[in-house]
Length: 216
Length: 254
Ligand code: FES
Image (cartoon, rainbow over all chains, first blue to last red; front, side, top):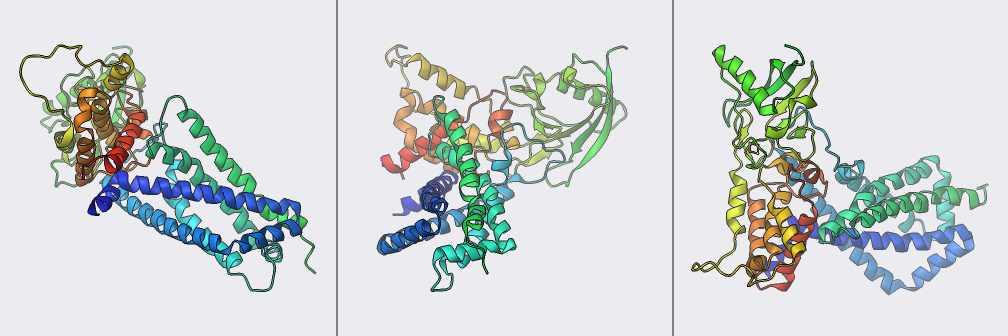
């Protein structure tokens, strides 16, 4: 099976790994957002959603295992690419200008990637491994009542959006999907996905703070 | 003289591959806006030669934008800021009197500086040799219409084949990747029926050679497409990616 290793350790192979795992995360984000939107229906709806999810335990465990594998592959390969790309430059330009291809989305990919990793770690620590006995709404209400947490969560979403805005169309291009008929649309969809991240996830802390009972 | 301009050049001077190199300032006087960028350098070099100094080394050949020999990063842009233009076809009318112009060689670990603005681009030749060909039996020239090629395919292949191998894509890529060059070569042959028999072997060999030559990895930054003097589209990169997937999953090539 060494052809598998050979196929996915070339530059294009590594990019394919990035694309497939990246699209997997986008699928996860879509599901995660759909669930979280129950927050707008209030505490009962959100708690019911969380409990329903827990009732699907085996499925959830399988998805978690998949996500962990994807995370290791995506972050590991990403760091490897980053190191190789830095080394490949060989000397800096005294003057360096973007020609119109590069965007703030694409230029920040490695950095937003690392920030997202930090966010995921903190997010799991605050929610997944939250103290037993409290329901998820109470945890969320408590977390977002802390100004530091509130702003950390709110401001992390534009970072995710930067990553998604380049990541989606870039994955399509890497997987070979570039056609004059639909590529412009893919780029628009990519930016729209970034906007959805900011609006969908980014406003959740605010929504929870508004809907939560004031903590006595 | 009227209508001429005086410019300050900051030119990368490097005696040889192992030299550290540095930017050196030169005055370019009485430059006509009708001159090309290389002719402007010729004028500066004449002055340097007269003063007994070493002239600035730069690559050039056809000076009409078709050979791919010339190239330098001018004020941070490969072949200068004009779209779809090689350095030899960049005219001084795009500059104004008093401008300060930075002139640097292509920077990539895979392109060692030979001298000043001259870099060794033989890595691109080696990638080409790894698979940029088709094998045919020699003999009488075959009848041209034996293998029908639809005009759109011929056009697309021709667009890819417009690559002159100048290396601007590598110089402009934030990751110093050679993907636009390699994929234009893969693409031009993959599109045509004559290129199909060796398509899988070709894409694997050329991509592996590219990695071996220590180019960076494509990040879909699109700077190559923006700087390419032949305006080659990154859709050729996507096509080569498809060829790669097909070769890995759908061919016997390893
Ligand atoms: S000298 Fe031939 S392309 Fe510029």
